[in-house]
Image (cartoon, rainbow, N blue to C red; front, side, top):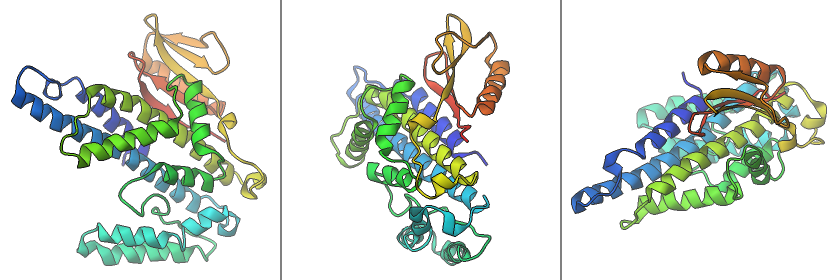
Length: 307
C-alpha cells in the first residue's frame, strides 16, 4: 500500500499536470470557458483535499508507529495520551457518521479495542486520534498535532524550513489559510472562478507545507521511539534547528547534490535514477531530510531520516 507521502506526491503532481490541459484554459468560446471555470474550481477543491488527506494519513502512520515502538503509554506526551483515548471519542463519532452502516459495528469494535489496549503493556493507538473529527483540517488542527509532539510554534518552524529551502516567502500559516479560503469559495460560491495561477501556486505551497509538517513530526517520532528522556519528559522541544537538508537539484544540465550550509555541490551526476539512491543513502547516514527537485524546480520527492 502506498505511503501517505507517495499518495500525496502522486496527487499533487497530477494536479500540477492538469493545469496545462486545454480544457481548463479559457478561450474565445463562452461555453468552453464556463466548463473550464467549473473544472478549475474542482481542481482547487481536490487539490486542497489532497493536502488535508496527507496531514490526516501521515498522522495516522505516526500513531501506528508509536503503538509498536516499545515506549510505555504512560511515558507518552500527555496530549498524545489524551488524543488517543477520551479525546478520540468525537473523532470516532464523526467517522461513524461517514461510514456505511454495514461497517459501523466492526469499525467501532476495532477502535474500542485500540483505546482499551492503552491500559496494557502492548498497545495500539487509534489511527483517528488527530484531525479526524471533522471533514476539513484547519490551521489550528495542524498546529495542534505538532504541539502534541512537543513542537512549539509549529507554523513558525514550518515557515523557517520553507525559507531554508527557498520555497516560499510568506508565513506558511497565511499561505494555508488563503488556500483554505480558495477551496471553500470554489466549493460553495456559484460565481467563483479560480485562476490557473492560483492552482499552480498552491502546488508549490502544498508541497512546502507537507515537507515542513513531515520533517517536524518525524523528528519528534524518532526522539520518542529512541527513548529520549529529555524529550519524553517535555524538557526538549523539537524545532527547525533539529533538521538539516540534503538536496538534489538540476542545474546546468546536471543533477547536483547539495548539503545545507555548503555552497559547492557534494556530488554531480547525469543519471538521476542511479544518483537518487546514493544521495538518499548519504542523507540516511547523516540523519538528514532528503529533498529532490525536478528539472523545472518543483519538489519531486522527499524523505525524512531524522533521529
